[in-house]
Image (cartoon, rainbow, N blue to C red):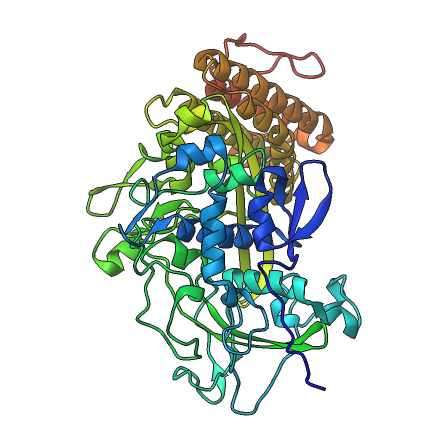
Length: 553
């Protein structure tokens, strides 16, 4: 009896995890992700990185489906798509044309893989290199257990495949035959996968249809792209090989959304993926890719500029332990585009470039509506140990009205940034209070000021997010920032009072530090003076301490 070749058609088989508007969660096929987009609330993978990577895959298909090869242009039909729906006929025709390229187990052109990938010794690893939340060499800290947990369904393997091409850590990989970079049978590090270099930012609408359109940045209206060469791997007619393609450079977002950072071959057994070969793929450095990559913010880098002899921008990575809202100024076009810095030669440069997705949304404000709220979501990865392991996955979001993205009326964006600055200055004053109280009692203040900072941002976090979400085109900027001053001052004053109350007798007695007596009353006095300066509050020069005694102001 003739055996049937295993296959898994990503166009028709369910594998993309989504949450529908009614709250139900299920897997859908690529075709269904588009046809059901207006009923799907959001993509919902195992990790935020999966969501980001699969969104980029869907966007790549949308770009290619809307490209007119005859005119070498993209259809500029965004407004009709927003009002009437996605171009499902064009998407369907495009997927039909390349249908055979979306088979996960195709014998010659498996999706996102190299069919004959192998090492000189024929080694095949288990599926662990694919699974992003599996700690390297430390199985004690994972919910996966037993051999069966490493045998992946075709659907799960497909999700991890897309994720690993986008976010794989650096480190030594399998030495693929045909790759001239291999030495001693090993593929030495070429860096993390492309999306792992970014501070990913994307907009979330009310449903997947809106999310796709909000993140579709039309070429020529925010990014550059050459439709003849900006193609995904399934359109590339050259055979997939393990060879080093060091001359390959991106010419638009589609290449970057589907960049083949690794060469991979999945190994199946019956209805499971049981192993893989994972080798180095196409290396890519991030310098000055802001004209091609729309889903990241960018920052001017003086060291990179010196090295290149020209202005150089790098992705603005997300900072672990720092809420997304604290860097909101670099995301909002009206603020980011106005911030300048001077290099060592006193030459002025733009400090940040806001994500092209934010710029595009600003252009489309009339169609979307100035007071329409969207989520700006941040996704990124913090790598450790020479970028060879995943230390932390960053996932955060803020809700903003479209009016904050305006490049012309920048008043709302300016107060959003000013409010962050006020919060940061106020928290810094609280840190000094905690440090001074600790030193007055004989400590060094290091632990105390860190705990005070964490407590302050924890309290301010929810309040700032609510305040930011409330800003829109009907907001009076002066009233709004005054309201935030009062709120932030009240929180920090309360936290300061708690620290003073908690200081012991030793701190009240104080001690001499560098010729100056530091004790609780003096520490509190300095703190309150700082708050008055930061928040410009009209308060009495004399305030009472918690036990009713006057202190110097």
